[in-house]
Image (cartoon, rainbow, N blue to C red; front, side):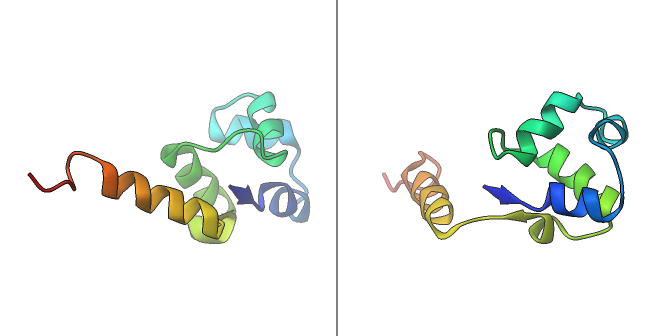
Length: 83
């Protein structure tokens, strides 16, 4: 999943450490998020969106392939299967 964390952080002149402190995570987590090596949990995504005063979908960008994978996972889950 792509995100605009680095772009928004730099636009607001916030350091990685300042953002990490505000979100109660480590600087390494911010680095991993910015490099696309880590996908934020829903809670972390919500905190980040609140920090930047934007909707989650403006900060995190789902690509078409990811949406298909999520839909397939939901359709194949026991909750959606017909008996």
